[in-house]
Image (cartoon, rainbow, N blue to C red; front, side, top):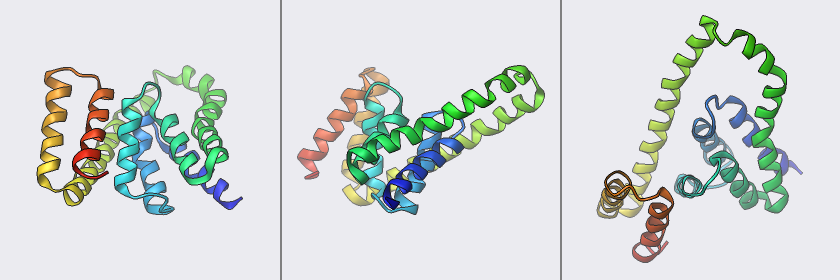
Length: 178
């Protein structure tokens, strides 16, 4: 029973504090899942982020379902999904009227200007952590190959991120024994 509560709390607090949607919650969820509870390593979490980015739909719910299932089975997946959407549901119901009345207030506009760079820094730190783990775990040659291939495929060739992630997973399975 305690495990279910931990799954709920990890996802609920991450999504309650993650102002800005799914990508903003990823560093918070990473802290809960990797650092606080130790359910998975940083590398395993980065693979979930990659998989979640490659699949259609909101990333937060895909990650929640996977993590919840991995940690606590089918009930864990449902608990994590509910905990992920509950903060938004509660806040929408309670605060939507207030926000609409004050959307043009200078305080609200200032808050948004402050929060966006903070989210960018958190995502940058997480990216650095993922790169460092990849570099130390797989070596600089494999890391460089995946970075260059990912850039060329995504930015130059405009290949769907789904195919790039699947290709990287296949590369890892073949060359890294993953």
